[in-house]
Length: 453
Ligand code: SAH
Ligand code: SF4
Ligand code: F3S
Image (cartoon, rainbow, N blue to C red):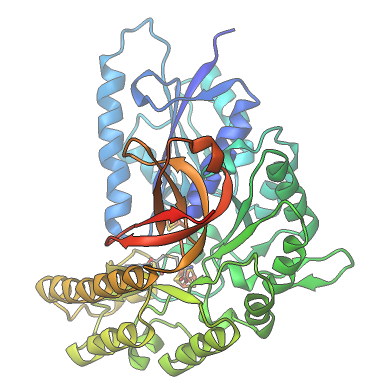
């Protein structure tokens, strides 16, 4: 039987990457195989992101392109089914079909397990569309163990995502996530452990734990107790085949002593933490409802550094939040100077429909926002370069898991997620292994090294 072709385009965060993997796993059981050719596919899924206006608009321009592909097809050609999944689907629901009638299925992030049925229905009665927007996180995760393959969670041959927590109860005033992903939900330890075991059987070495607020994890343990993220990491680290553990994204309010102790005691836990600060002014943090001060954040950074001196950090920042003054923006610059982040993401504030901040008066001109972003990014790049430069001369364990673009080179990741390249004509000797490498050259976004035998 000819397999049907599935093309998934993923926008947004790692959680969406993970979800796309799960959708492709769930549909593989139904005879679909992945294709990177949108044009030739029987089912196209756009797994969308609603975090900023631009992200949502991208989906509509892609739908326009897909319509052209569909229009070109002959009548006897079987129709392509178009599904919109993810956070735009959750936020806009039926509106999407009104704006883009070529869409057959709209499916929110908590209902992917119902996708096979929706696809079957759409195939049967092509004109009727399907809509699934429940918040059914428990049901979603309960259905995962039935999936035969866990191919979709892999990001390389050595590393894989495992979602342990979904949703957010923080309600930062600028953010859509609590509305698109629903309330915080944690998977049980047993469930997480089973998924990791499947991945280890396939040679995975690095487990990347995911959650919208991953350190708010409070999953059920083996008794009827609740486990923190620190405790879960300690448990995962006991599995021999797990060589590296990472987690993302954390909230400063949910950092606890168990997590800091895990960084002190567990070598498999990488000394790297993505801890978004968002802004370097207490007034703006308050307006954002972040529920902590800059000082509190800096204290957390110090605690991690005390526990693990080689710990490095990354962050997210928003510039041009309504009412942000030049002086408040300079607070953000000072915070970056103080922490000297290894890497950082920065965004111009984008008002999102339905969030409290969207009703605040936008006092910062677009010109000013762009200027602030530019100044911030210049500083961030300087810190990133400095961090890479400081790696030169060090010996670091590198997990090799991919070919470099350059012939005769392979690439891997340092504990700090820096891409590291080595020259070799025996790639199989190092692939899917963690090898000590002496770093001899630094570039703005990568490193080069020589294997230490
Ligand atoms: N749960 C994570 C963030 C998820 S969204 C956390 O709390 O840190 C990823 C990043 O997008 C955020 O950290 C924030 O910096 C940015 N972001 C979210 N909403 C935004 C908006 N309305 N405009 C601009 N940036 C936004
Ligand atoms: Fe959004 Fe704030 Fe929740 Fe992060 S913590 S997902 S920024 S509401
Ligand atoms: Fe975007 Fe949804 Fe992730 S809005 S950032 S895809 S949680």
